[in-house]
Image 1: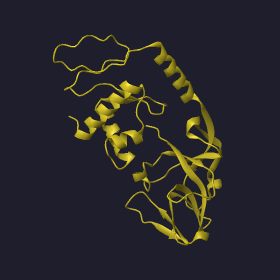
Image 2 (image 1 turned 30 degrees about the horizontal axis):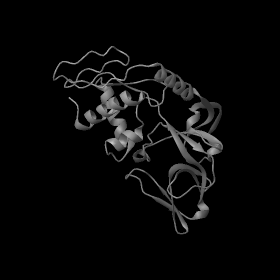
Image 3 (image 1 turned 90 degrees about the vertical axis):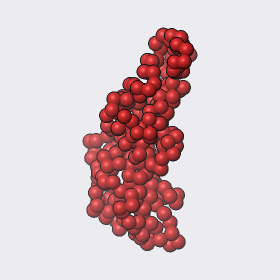
Image 4 (image 1 turned 180 degrees about the vertical axis):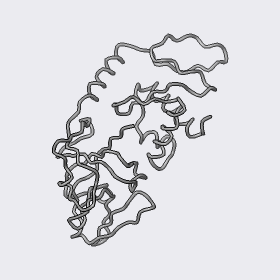
Length: 241
C-alpha cells in the first residue's frame, strides 16, 4: 500500500521516463509534488525502493528505473517491447517506440554524461581547521563535467544535519567553486575567526554577516564582517546510496 505522495511521485517518474527517456531531477520532482524540500523527495524515493517499485542504477546521476506500478495499473512495459492492442475498456499506457534517431540521441546523452573530471576531495568539515588543512593530497572524487563552470573547484564531505532543509544531508559530497565573495543568500563555505569552517547560507544584515542553517534546530549565528571569510560557493552535490 502506497501513500498518496508515494503514488503521485511514482506516476510522475514513470511518465517522465516515458516522455524523455531519463528520470526527472530532484528539483522537478519537488515542484511536481509541491514539496518544500528535496529531502522529502529523498524519503519518498527510498520508501518506493524498499517496496519494490523503484530501482536506483549505481554510479549514474538521475538514474531511476520504475520496476512496477501499483496493482491498480497495468504493469510497466519494458521500453522497446512489442505493443499489443488493449482490450476495450482496459488501461492503455503510452509507450515510447524505439527508433534510430532516439537511439542516437541516447548514445550522445550517455557520452556527455560520461565526461568527468577529478577534483580534490577535502575531509569532513571540522572546527579548528581552515579549509586548506582538510585536504588529503591523495584523495580525489570524479565529478560530471556538466556540474562545473569556470573557476577552481574542490569537493567537500558534509558532516551533520544543519542543512537538511536545503537538501544537503550528512555524508553528502558538495562541489564548491573557490571564491572569496558570494551574493546574499548563497550557500557558502565560511571560515569564522580564522579557526572554524562551516557550510551555511550567507546573509548580510547591515554591517553584520549572518550564517544561517537550514534546520530549525540550529540558531542563526551573527558576526562582524571582519570575523567571516568566504572560502567558496556551493555549485553542486553528489550522493551515494
